[in-house]
Length: 246
Ligand code: NAD
Image (cartoon, rainbow, N blue to C red; front, side, top):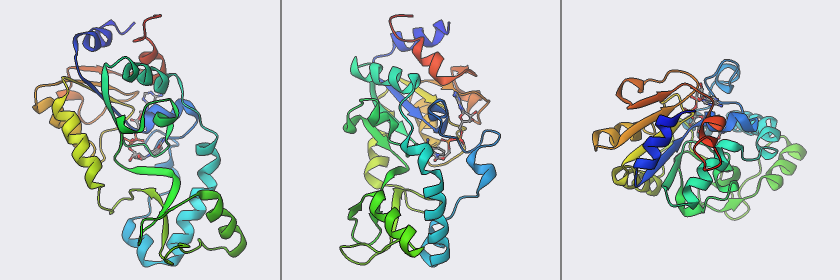
């Protein structure tokens, strides 16, 4: 099964894996754009609106806590584990992810090999002083007062450590992602509709730089026409087929 993907991986020296929400649906976390996905239930809250309005901040935290069971109970699936094996054996140099669920780290990939373009929703940060805050503290205060608490260090606004629409991309992660992309000879995009920029620019950069591009996604994507190989299959079983026991 999928011998051509296996051939591509076998022939490559430095593989970059790029993931989107689709890698985590098999862990029980809905994606954005599949039918019934989060996008159809709630339009995203833009960063400017979050900053401008306490009502929007309350709405954002309420949504976060409503979703939290899916995130906190989720564990890495066979797709995450297959990628972790490919990192472990040195084939995959970096995992660039749009995901905010921490499941690549939970699968055993070292922190320095995971590049989070859109941050992480498993903790919060003060937007003023950058102090990290854990979610149970915020949830308890929210449930008591109906509002998110201020930062205990400086009184600033707390937000999950994610990058919202309208918020600047994280500079260091963007630099690391570009360097990894330019250094790879195979770029595999997995479980992403490839419509969110600048993240979706990385497969294009890889291809323009001479790397082979594989897109593994249940549905068609915007970038299928520039890919060397497109697989419209499920991420977990397809990635598992790359491992030696198959
Ligand atoms: P998306 O929802 O736009 O696209 C996901 C794609 O994955 C879809 O095209 C879908 O067909 C495909 N897919 C779903 N399950 C699959 C499976 N098992 N195997 C193969 N393909 C599968 O997601 P995106 O491109 O990552 O963009 C959405 C944004 O929302 C990102 O910025 C991401 O950070 C955020 N988000 C993250 C999570 C998470 O952290 N798990 C969940 C939802 C949204």
